[in-house]
Image (cartoon, rainbow, N blue to C red; front, top):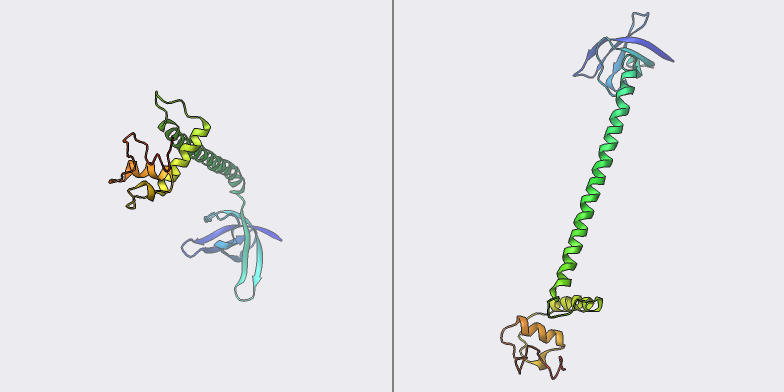
Length: 189
């Protein structure tokens, strides 16, 4: 059963107070946990509540609802939720757009580097097959290391011979000096 009354005493730092039921003089204990909406009570608030009779503590109010604030809290809660949801949704959308643009930019930058690396005025435009070969060569080159090999007989592929010729000092793999290493063993024409 629900009752109505007025908050006649509230001790905020302790989190409890007392309600006087309408038309009665007996005071009913109320704890902050008894208020449904979580707002702090003020002395003089008109409230609706239920009563529990605790053997040790006596009468205690619970499920307390503010009568004067109810319509105000209903009006203010709905817009807050809409604004909050809207902001969260808009922030996520903005984040997703920025993240997407960063990914696209990184992809374009990385691929433009590969596509433009072999594209001079003297050379034809890079086809998709050439692009695949360029990517494979770049991956292969990354796996090679200058490990003291200096002669063609020590190399295992044309790509390795080219890597050594370009990056490793002391390599003697280009006997005729034309820039193509190991022509007899690996990079023959």
